[in-house]
Length: 478
Picture 1 (cartoon, rainbow, N blue to C red):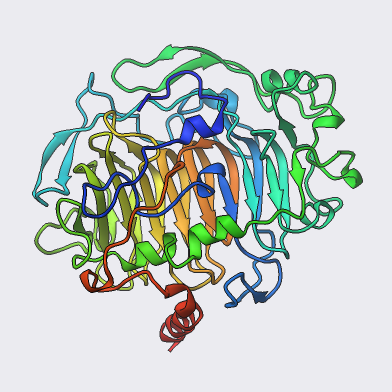
Picture 2: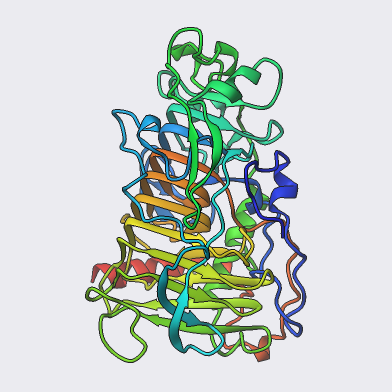
């Protein structure tokens, strides 16, 4: 798989394509479920503004604005990585000096190493891919609930014009009057060509720091008003805010996308059903990462649930399922450190959080290793509550997806970040971010094994979805 360097591919489908999945009786080369629809979007917001039912008939709480992004860009990373002070504003500090360096083999970055093949903890030097800079044009957004609100403030969206921002609701209801403002849609045409160069900032790449992969360059913030501000025809802002809702499509049917997530052979059913009884060598393997603060194989460094020293996870070919053990009722925290996930190009990983844990990041990075593809890693939770399931600040994320599929109001909240990701949750709140798309790409569903060969089959799970969620929610509130 070709690595991203200075420019991302403008064609979304070619950028996210992965090899077709094969039957379970052969070596796995994917996640085990279709991602044809999932692979089209950088952000997927699932939740409603008000209390009501989701598409499976489950009662879900209202979460307000399901996608709320403030400052910078989606579908592009037009700044050095980590961004220095000239690319910060009063609304957010720079990342340079506020996150660890991006490790490269030219320098020594020692850390703990864990192999999914053996489970043995050893020592290794970290070696991550360089974080790409430029315009990917892959900042597409899906708004799947009919009762949903979009809010973009001072954001440049660089997206595929055939996809862009899609809403189940009408355009007027999706992007309400006087909601989004000073946000623009770049689709590569002549009208918005200047936007690609000038909004929200300029950047001239000069190289990268040897041994760190930190990119270097010069540039400046572009004023949000005056001759360099985005033209009205490109504004995502509604007419009440002087725009034209550029790039926004209403009344879109997301049934195929939701089937990939919540259908009987979709992501939720498949990931929930993976266990050692139905995913054995050579199809895949399991690893439990002990971050409880004590015990054999513990990878924590600062107490229960805390990882505060460099960690490299080396995947084997095929599908790797990694479960975190935080000791019960303790959140997972990555603090002042770097996590590198590496392995061969045909390795895939799903990291599952405990039902009672959220994942927090502070002044830390999660990066794909230099051998691994950028669309091969998913961090997953189906925790059934309104917590911030992923809460990150001051971080670089490269080649990582974060999915919250609990359908109970769970949120992804990220402040001050750069990189290449996919984010899926009922509620997504982003401040001061520059994100391109890296996530599961197009694929075909594998042949399912016979029911007798599984401890739990995916078949029929969609019919039990409502009951499962209600029981899970009741157990957490008891």
